[in-house]
Amino acid sequence: MPPMMPVTKALMLICVGMFCLGELWPYLAGWLALYPIASGFFLPWQPLTYAFLHGDVLHLFFNMLGLWMFGTELERVLGQKRYVQLLLAGVLSAAAVQLVFTAAIGSNVPTVGASGALYGLLLCFGMLFPDRVIMPLFPPIPMKAKVFVAVFGGLELLMGLTGGGGVAHFAHLGGMLGAYALMRYWRRGR
Image 1: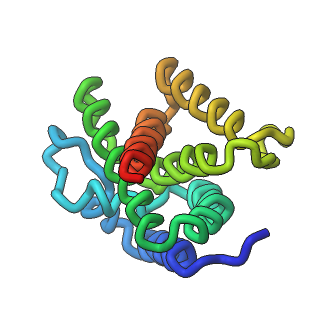
Image 2 (image 1 turned 180 degrees about the vertical axis):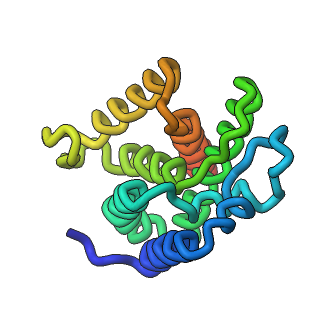
């Protein structure tokens, strides 16, 4: 398992700290969660701050596990500046897609979590290391990163179209879209 890089470590500490703070002061989510624009609770900083909040301990655990597993390698390869840009692209594009989706279905439910950014990291990992074999927790079958990305992207689309059960599946796809657009931009500049 890779040692943690500085930005990844800082983000993990911030997310854990915000989770603990949210447990002590539940009203924090009212200010920082991503509320739909039509809800009347939307604030301009929410497209960024929602990523630091998590719904429960399992949500936090799996996002931090993914951040550590994929983020550490990407931070090492891309450097801190581009790594932060990649995370921001995932967070902001996930927020934009989620805002459009909630407006389209008329939902007023807020969104929390760094999952959109993590799906962006996952896509970037698959683009940079397509043939690297990884062993996911679910299902525990070794597969190449490009297959893993395609499977998880396809599952997110399927679950989003069939009713997500309280999970922001289109935000996850939005994070992948933002990371893909940024990766294409970087590659075009070479």
